[in-house]
Image 1 (cartoon, rainbow, N blue to C red):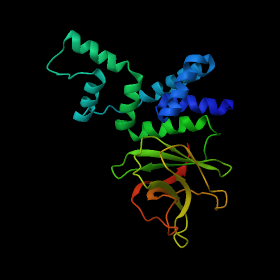
Image 2: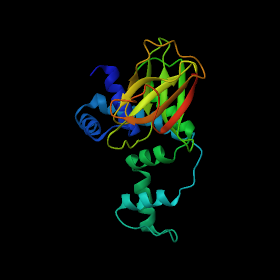
Image 3: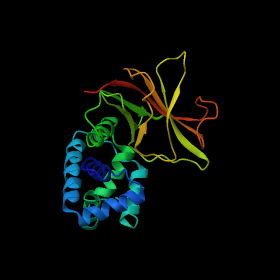
Image 4: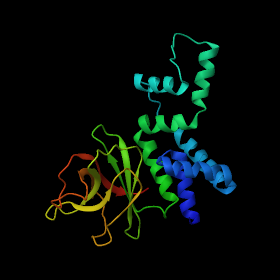
Length: 236
């Protein structure tokens, strides 16, 4: 791996975005490679600063169930006790748990900033950014477009893909022409988008992700469920 690729791997490892095989590789590197371990810790420190800017979100029943699962036994919150405090501190200090909880319940601002942080390890600051929102207005992915016109997609949350389906990324800048496919993937992962033969992206250009049959839409137009979408805006 190049230094930029190693740093990007460290960033995605710190964010908790890696698939199991990649996460295992990154964990091994963190244990055996002091430079890589230092890069991971540096990203964790940056993300900790970002987390401090997020608005507090009340924990729901689902989050408490996850806490109970992590602790390995049921937790009854009936009042402060040394045992409960000890367990709660263990959860609080569990970076893996809070990465998962943050991805599931973090604010859109945190997700967007985290996505841009990962991008910084890959290429210069983007010229345009699109935050792709789900139906419940969660930022689930970021599209970054560089000054050179190259674009990539960075997922910010796990995205289940049913058997026999793939994720297809589309862009629309001209309604007369219609949406154009710019990428296919069998799972939520970083993806370089195929925009080299398209007009240069502009502000308010639509990007969206749909579920399509393996191999992509048979019609050349979106046919499946729209999972998320968003418009480009100039990067700050």
